Figure 1 (tube, one colour):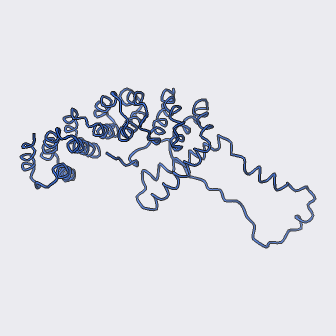
Figure 2 (tube, rainbow, N blue to C red; figure 1 turned 60 degrees about the vertical axis):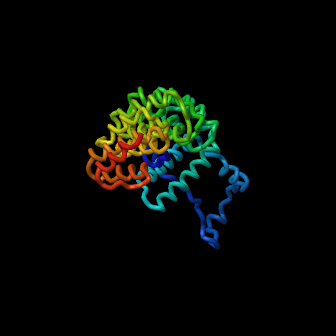
Figure 3 (cartoon, one colour; figure 1 turned 90 degrees about the vertical axis):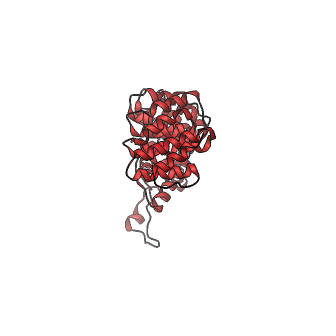
Length: 316
């Protein structure tokens, strides 16, 4: 079940991409008197060119990336217009090019740099889209600093590799005390299972995440259970159709519908779960739930929950 990437992201992303414009002089401007009388030797043009080709120090480079990632994250979270989407896409392409070109240095900073450099490097490596960074990011999940771990999870989320080992990520969903780490671990697990990653730990982690105190963890975990087509989780998913946070309830409805449509033997149970929910929920979500029932049924049985339940009861 594809999930929009814009739903989440950890607080330590976001800055403004600084585009430095070279100073210029007006064409045809005449020399000043000081230009004509200054006897100091002029710097050869070759030296100027060579100096301008030198990469900025790694600390400054990471600070620039940090600002760009913060701005990208802001556009992902709050952008609503086509212009915002275009800006985010251009910024993502810029980040991909810059991080890929200096990925070896960024890996070194992640592994042995000062804390703030490790925090920035952990997420920046995800933009490289390079398999070379997968192993360092997985190793960073053992970092002593929770913010580094949270951003390493975002790096793996951005990398989107279906061959990513899930064991450490599962453990962080279930056991981590920091809410930011659990949130990003559940996000990472949701995205990677959507890409095809599998591990015996994933179902158990998502089942536990469905009862997490953090709504974002419950949301991601519900969608993960849908990705994994976990029919045994239909009951707890149905119970969360009345979750007080609408996005969680909607994620559960999506997961139930996906399982029912994809696994023929589960269609009846999925239909009955949704139909029962239609009888219990109120407000705008009731219409959303009906739309999911229509998707599952392939037709509309009306607005009356009793009609839907009668249809669902006829299914095996």
